[in-house]
Amino acid sequence: MKIFVLVSRVPYPLEKGDKLRAYHQVRELSKEHDIHLCCISDGKPHPKAIEELKKIAAEVSIVQLKKSMIYLRLFRALFSDKPFQVHYFLQEQAKRKIQALIKDYKPDHIYCQLIRTAEYVNMNFDVPKTIDYMDTFSIGAERRRENAPFWLKPLLRIEAQRLTKYENLSFELFDHHTIISQQDQQLFYHPKRSKIEIVPNGVDTQFFDRKALEVKEIDSEEGLKLLFTGNMSYPPNVDCAKFLANQVLPLVLQRYPKVHLLLSGANPHQQVKELRSQHVHVSGWIDDIREAYASATIFVAPMRIGTGLQNKLLEAMSMELPCITSTLANNALAAKIGEEILIGNDANEVAEAVFELIEHPELRAKLSVAGREFVVNQYTWESSGTKLSKIMSEKAENR
Image: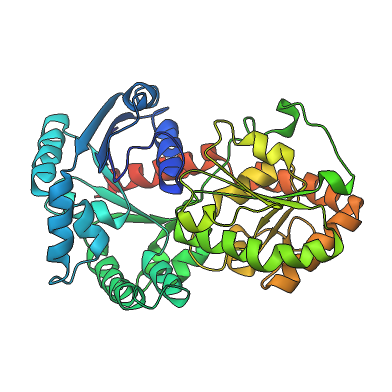
């Protein structure tokens, strides 16, 4: 089957969740299908992007957005009922190029990642289409509003309302719909949400394997390190980093004054950079993120806002790192509490979970082994790719 895959970012390098998901899905789909990967880009792509993406797709196209038009579209969005992010990524010249590519390629199926790409294929009635919502963005905007600065709250309220409306309207444009977790499916505001197929993320357990690296085990307090990873400009990650540094770490230091917190990930926001201190390290981008995982004692990701499945937890568990997260994040992950993961929803609960892991090496060992077994059995890109391929193949046959 010939599949035209449309994504709103160039999925290389893999420093964002949507890029990671798109990259691995295309790689898996390419094992059985002919793939034309079309990427919308709002900036200069990485010099090796096309070279690397051609390793996973038969054809690769990058459609460049004009910066001047982005600002104009955002201004127009003030007087529209469509979400700001839809306006941000939509340009008529880009749409003409994408339609020309589709016409030339003659796909059997069109696969769109995120609702921000829906407008580009809204008139392609003759080709079966699937949309991957990934997360429930309307709920994400609502949750961000709770902790946002006062000046941003009205905009997030408007965006959440627009996203809810647009998620419902765009639903009818597609033959099939996918989402990352059952939690996001249940949060989706649509009467047919039960028809949205759950296609989770995976993790490359061969790559994220502690045994693949030389790791020096350190049990002394001097070597105790808490780790949080992710794109450090993404608001939910910025919020979590601040929560860990400002509320959790001070409690931990009262009992263990030599513990350090490492915040590791691309594009650290200024608010994250300002967290640097004697006990808080901000690394920025690391070429091999496994080194950060391997250097840590405990992984802490008590997410308070946002939606979706946290790739950082999958990677950390695959690296046999005992993990602490929040109920919000584990609702999507579905790990067994106390056996595969620990839960903390406020600063005191997270600190207590840290103490429990520090003071009970046998619990650390138990969670490390059980966590890896959990992701190996439940979260593979191969199984997700197979499910996605089946969804699109059935739609193509039954249209």
